[in-house]
Image (cartoon, rainbow, N blue to C red; front, side, top):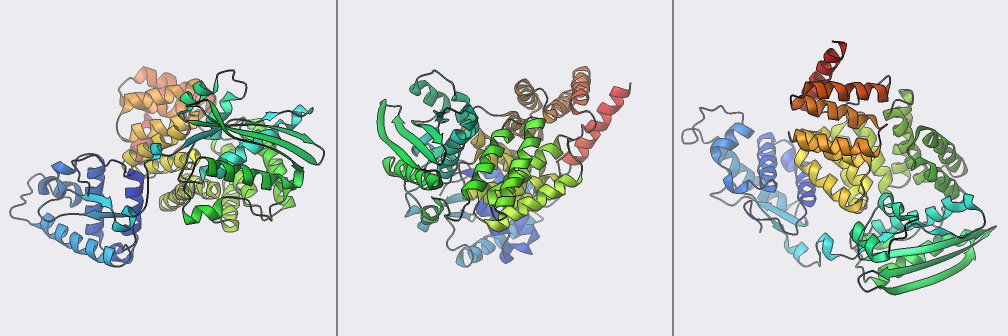
Length: 519
């Protein structure tokens, strides 16, 4: 068992919190408010490295609303509730939690939580993230005569990234970072070092009429050796079979261990329409530009994919994401958020195991200020796709919106590990968690980096102004606020904060900035 005064080692804090959330949702804890609050506090303090300093006096004030005059020697509330909590934990692990991978315990005579792997978990081989093979799929070269077919080559690489990222036995770098090396002349070893991986998958695509030729090779950058290569010359209708074969060859070459659920996820459903998928790829090529005009163009392709195949979950999910992008940045009417919500719900209904559907649904719940629903969908998405940097990004934003800055920080840092060249949105999430934690200098720096990457992205301007306000630098804050107004035009308030007291403080910052702006 790991105590609060020790490092958690290879136990991922996100896994611990997921186990805690599952536990608190059971009927054993649902009506036990005091034990729920106490357990949540003790686990949080442990994860923050303060478990060894837990005392009855501080617990009484933090959990049970006692004042500074509280005397633990005359009022035994903490000892009583801790005993009840131990009883609840025993009941939980005898019933609902008997198969949980982790166990949370509170030994008698101490408030320091012990967290460790269950006997079941200890029988499994579960290496830490960085003990796993790490890989990046670089953009495939378009060797055809038609440059407009570049979207198709990109789609092959993107699909392979998506397929591999669902495997918990791999570390897979996101498309966003990998595709920055499209025209790079850097040697493979240097690219791998910058991305933090050992293996690179390179390839090429030549599409002509109804046929496609695909070449792929897997490189071990530690040795420079090509450890697998293949060329496929197939009918276009066989494209999914080719991608599935490449994924399986990589899994075999790297000796990736698949858990039972992952074996079923590796591969495409034979019912997918190649024509609908082609429209999806065309839409994604425009969506990833993240400009108003290109995102608006993506809508027609996603809608066309849905027209061709109304049951195609990815088309619904990415249509929802595109609609939300436009809504958040004030380019769309209010009812567009509701339209996005409907498509995200449809994506999940059509394919419960499609990670992006869950991630986008959680993202929309966040902007609807539905915290519990956003958290549940976000956690589900990460569980389905542990390498999905966007799922972790959206979950991090939800956690900061709920005032859970420490957990949100862990989540965004893991997202940036998977996306080592972070986007302006990743930097917004990083800054938002610093902001919630009261680290306003660090928050301001993250927002400045986001602005440097994407000057037209409003949220970083707004939260930079608010960070500077908290630092007492009113003139700098006013300058940042006026820049925010010039960028955002008619809707600068991008409030997704749901938890108190942060929500009230957030609104107070905006009111102060508005007063300063009016002179």
